[in-house]
Image (tube, rainbow, N blue to C red; front, side, top):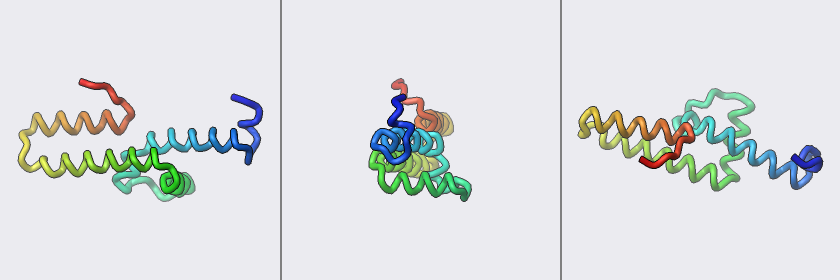
Length: 100
């Protein structure tokens, strides 16, 4: 980490801060998408970050679409298929993006 990235207000500091916020968004993406992030200063900061970060917004939209899709097929799919879809969704939300 450069010295400049430790000085508040510098370009390097802003890039480092944005990167840290992206990591936090990913860690809490499931709660954010479900609207279950507890009201706090951190929650407000993450919500504000998402309004300006297209990458985090896109990630949230993908997770939201996946959850809507699972909910749509949940009434018609057999239990094994539904469990597999939910496992994949949990892995995706936790950051495990391994192909099967």
